[in-house]
Amino acid sequence: MKLVVDASIALGWFIRQEIYQDQFFLLESDHILVAPDLIFPESANALWRLVNAERILPEQGWRTLAALDECFDLIAPSKALAETALSMASRLNHPAYDCFYLALAEREGVQMLTADKKLLRKLEATPFEALAIGPIEKRV
Image 1 (cartoon, rainbow, N blue to C red):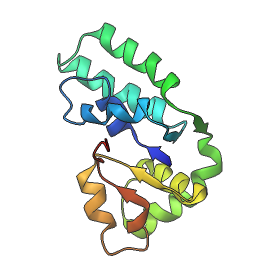
Image 2 (image 1 turned 90 degrees about the vertical axis):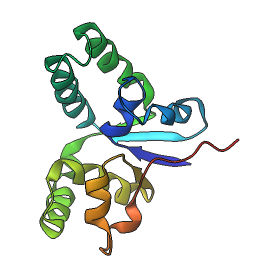
Image 3 (image 1 turned 45 degrees about the vertical axis):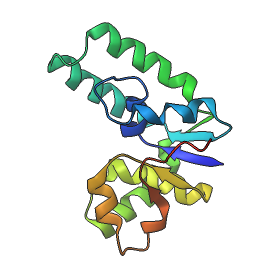
């Protein structure tokens, strides 16, 4: 199964303080994981915030950012998603950053995996609701 993974899930794979570290099994499964290239600046910003708040050491931030590149089967250029992301952001009245992941999910015909509860609530009862899901349980 192919999934678009956002930064909230991807960072949870590596940061112990994050409650979504249990999603690590996705890396060891036969899922095809994709993300827009936006995941790198978004993750770098989140890691900077964690370092700045002294929740992680700078070295852990660097290692996490370097490891992210190895986690995905496909990194999609954001430029090709920008128009759709802007349209979605306007319709949802929600930041365009998250909508790049939604646009990629729509383009690929798959779902986006996110830990962003605010986004999931925002998508309820919209045409985009089926594009995003919250953390998934490991199937044995």
